[in-house]
Image (cartoon, rainbow, N blue to C red; front, side):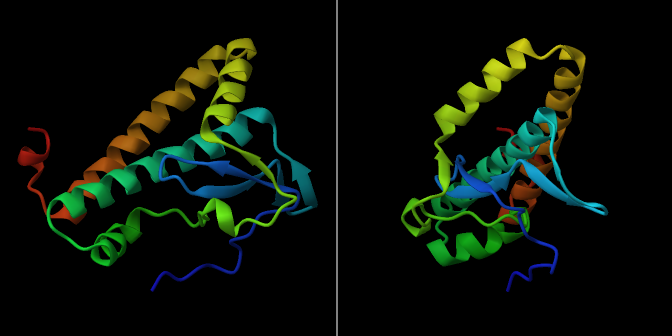
Length: 155
């Protein structure tokens, strides 16, 4: 059973963003701070989306790997739970009308447009390097969860 912390919430307004696992995740431009609600700068907004994207991708790839190894859907889901973020993804049909929704192609295009005009390119490059490292760490965990010896995962 996946236990959620009492502070797992999103501040309204919330939009939904499609991720590689074909689920839609809530993500807002506002965040809770000690003094109340503050709007996130664009770099933090996109960082949050990129982290969700990395975790969603590794989770989907892990489930696929486990299914290819003969595990049933429920078993693959349960085995990949440690790779899930605290954010819950929803099927498109489960999201009430009225929420703004961005498919993956759209939000990635918005990110790339913002990225190309962002004045602190070194900050974006540093962030992308960190995300590459995060993804590699998650992929290593996925290999361990699948029970594949590390030397066989790269072949």
